[in-house]
Amino acid sequence: MIKSLLDFLFENTCKYCGKAFSPQEQGYLCPSCLSSIEKHEFFEDLPEIPSVDGYEFFTKYEGVARELILLYKFHSVKPFSKVIAEKIREDFSNFVNEVNPDIVTYVPVHFFRWWTRGYDHNEEVMKHLNLPYRKILKRVRYSRPLARYKKEEREKRLRSAYKVVESCKVAGKSVLVYDDILTTGSTAREVAQTLKNAGATEVYFYFFLKES
Image (tube, rainbow, N blue to C red; front, side):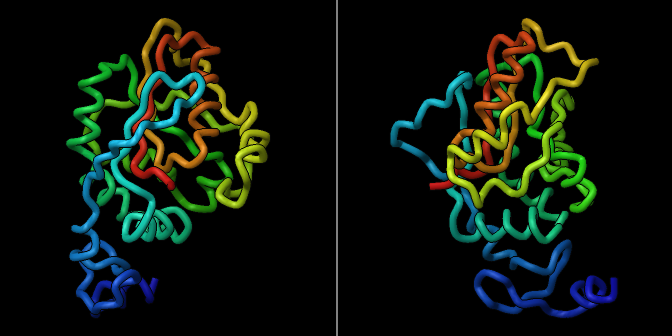
């Protein structure tokens, strides 16, 4: 508590560029570095993800954007949810209009992850997008952060990790799912297959970042 108060009262050093700045909502990344996160145009062919009918993402998992995600997810810098939402709002809205889904949702974290972090990082972004969304998925199988595992192990740990909330009807519906990072596509595939097993007709994804 005391450290947080001091962060807001005095100049902080940007974790990325090392320059001092006076924090407003957070004291980790300076406004100059945050303003450098922009939409990246991907011209190369994107790999297909089984069971996913289409996807879009905002920028690459590198530089300031990578630092932002690491701080947001693993150091509980909750104000970054608003930063991410502000960055992607227009592009995300355009993708919503393009695919015209019946339901907009997000990839949820396991309860234990929510309890230790204090929030669901994907849902917090959805709250700041100011678009209608529904929580239709639940993570029922816990795993340590998947970044440490290769694709085969990720797929093993994600098997049957999600289920559709019983009260939510997705049969005959198209669904757009938000997630923070596209790495191997294992999470997207498992979520999409879960939704299609429940009767969803189409599943699309929007990612904030694409890992190289």
